Image 1 (cartoon, one colour):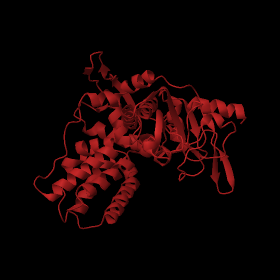
Image 2 (cartoon, helix red, strand yellow; image 1 turned 135 degrees about the vertical axis):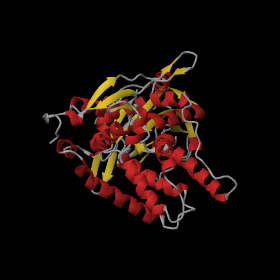
Image 3 (tube, one colour; image 1 turned 120 degrees about the horizontal axis):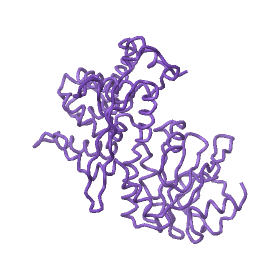
Image 4 (cartoon, helix red, strand yellow; image 1 turned 180 degrees about the horizontal axis):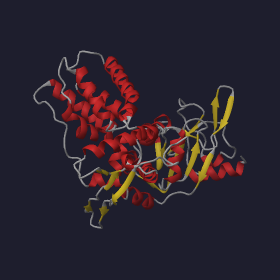
Amino acid sequence: MSNSEWINIRRLLWDDDEQIMIANSVKQVSPMKRAGKITVQPKAQYCCGNSFRAGSKKCNRSISRLHTWVIEHDEEMPLSHQRELWRHEKLPHTLRVFSGGKSIHVYIRTVEDVDAETWKRIADDLLLIFPLADKTVLGVKSTFSRLPWGVRIEGDQNIDQKVETTKTRIPLQTLLEWIAEQDVIKERACDIDKEEFPLKTGSKEGVKNKEAWEEFKRTLPGCAYHYRKLIQHRVVAEQGRRNSELIALMTFAFDSVCEEVALSFAEWFYRLHADVFEDTFEQHMIEAHDHQRNMLASYPAKLSQHEREIYEGMEGREKAFFRICRSLSKCEALEGRLFYIPLTKFGYRMNLHTEQIKRLVKSFIADGMLRLVRQGTRHCLAEDGTITKGVAGTYEWILKDQCRLTASCVRA
């Protein structure tokens, strides 16, 4: 990479008079010289998208200008899934950086600076839209991210952190309008989530439950939503019943959500009622994993030969989507094998983004497993701020009616 190319990237993210933090260690706390004097590509790994007061240390109080957010998934999403996501995602962003390892860092740099309240509101909205994003990277204004064209040090190797896509700075209004159009943001405006966790009142355990529930909603809002809707009324937290209730929870969740969400249900069942149970959390989660492995191993035997051949040729998230759709077709209160697929809430069930759910739906339709019966509608935001709530699409599970396999149904 030439010096001029580096300067172009640097000026895309920072103005010449900004004090920026570029470091080779996450422990570095003092900013470098101002950006205008960095004319050679730094041999460093990290940077902070926002800028600092001259001579200050790396902390939120030292931030002087706010204009950048970074979305990173890392361990929460395989690299192949990240690439698929950003190949289709329409989020307006400035550039994408491949770390050289497990993650793609997406920089959103607005044309205008914003105040701290606006920055936090946008960060919270983006975390709602991208629930698997690293909350520290996206939600903390002074956090380090991978430096575009920086050098990642892995043992004796130096790996370039490649800039894969370069665009422009984003007008703030463009970003705000895109955020406002996302279904998960419109759903929040619909006030559809007013129900509270049922607490025991007048006791210490009620206070503990409330604190745990608030943490659950804050850290995993989509998972908490489905826990309340699907799980809370199905389990009883009493001494001597933890194991039997855990089995009931995991058995129901197996056909209702993906494996990761099911394990989160198990984890929070314990955390919400930790004062009741005598067994350790570690033992509880070992049993949850064991039961899930047993269900994964035995599930194909419950399918017809035709279904089994298709299911066993699928990847992990396709298998979870298969189980959920097949189960909903048997239990939804609709005539025949019809059921709804609300994209945002299915994303909560699957630990996936809305666009990824859309592609799974299209794939299952193309492979002859689903049929679209009635197209869904999006939430509609009027100029006066009122919202007309959208309707989820209606689908029919038609796999059992197939008399033969098509080549596209079975994946190599």
